[in-house]
Length: 157
Image (cartoon, rainbow, N blue to C red; front, top):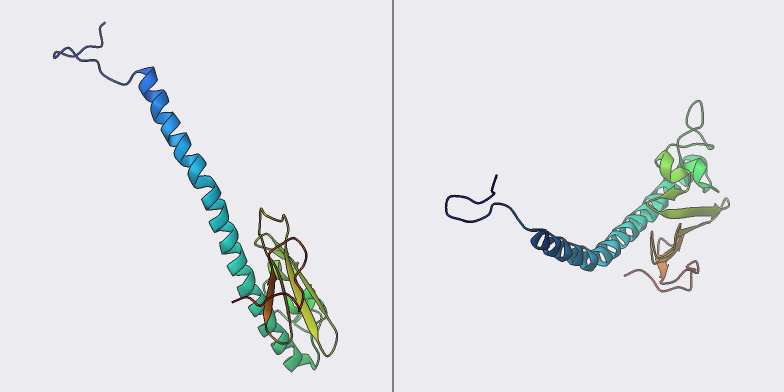
């Protein structure tokens, strides 16, 4: 049976036409993919800054309740069992208390009188391009590189 209509034209597309359309779509994807990756990393970094602010708030609440700062993230998270207390104050979500969230590794170090927070990408230049540092001053510092940010790194603006 012939694929020509009454007016003499074929129905459908030729193989060459389909290959051209696929090539155009692939070109558009190849151009858009790096931009999407960059936008996704920036979104993660903004989320990390908000999570550091959440950790500051949790540390203030912890210090108010227990008379000292938490020395590790688990102390700010949900209790392992039983009721809330110094070992698990339930001030931050369990995922953040485990130390990895949004492609970043969070490290809380502290003692009774002070604390520091570092946030570093799990896979540099894939989950994030910046590292972050903060302490009791509530100022967040950033480093555009794989080395962890410090108190001497530039402030996040």
